[in-house]
Image (cartoon, rainbow, N blue to C red; front, side):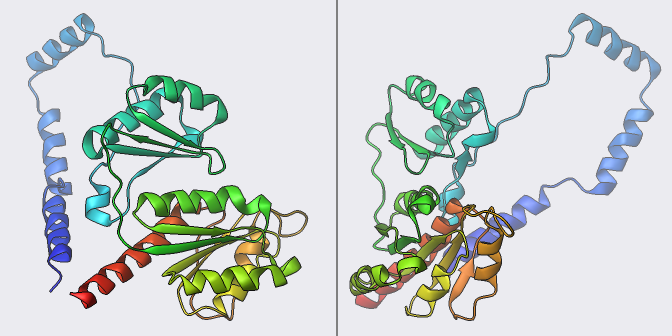
Length: 285
């Protein structure tokens, strides 16, 4: 019996019960309409005396996500300013001791380092990511093993993003880069070594025609996550041809994430690898 799953379902039930029903919302609206005029006048006077503050963006980090879901919350830095990134990172650090920021704009790196001088700040340039740890934080090791393969060097940033996430989820990660179908002979030996090390899942990042994930999935006995990248030009460029090619695969065992979704690919691979590691540990006991 999976007690962890039961606990998660019970938590979901409690959360749903706490949501306001439409009837309660309508009742509250009706009561506000029936409010005596004297109270309305008082509210107007108070609003004039104490004008409302300018509306800000409410930050609600989810530090408990990893414990609940098995995957941490990741701050998507590309669309946020430094103040928002900092506020979210502080919330995650308070709750879990670590904050992961993806797609960090280059100009935001130095301000983030300055804001967290008292912490351990690791900048992963190739992945365009920053990981911040509280002093004394120890990253878990699950025993899961993930392989990350890129077709070309242009696919490396997205592949590295997947690798960073899998590492932060406790997996051992082995990376193989620049082994695409334009020179397929380059793949055989590294792939043999990867399998001999007992890898549990493999992420394959590819742009252009996106053929490499199908090739790998046709050869290996473990799940493969296809990661299309926005590398390409002309008809079907920006990752579209790669995505469609992976979705049209005839190789069994290939699942596909969205274009450039290195975070999603890394999480999926790590979830698989960590479950396999749990099964291995249970088998040995």
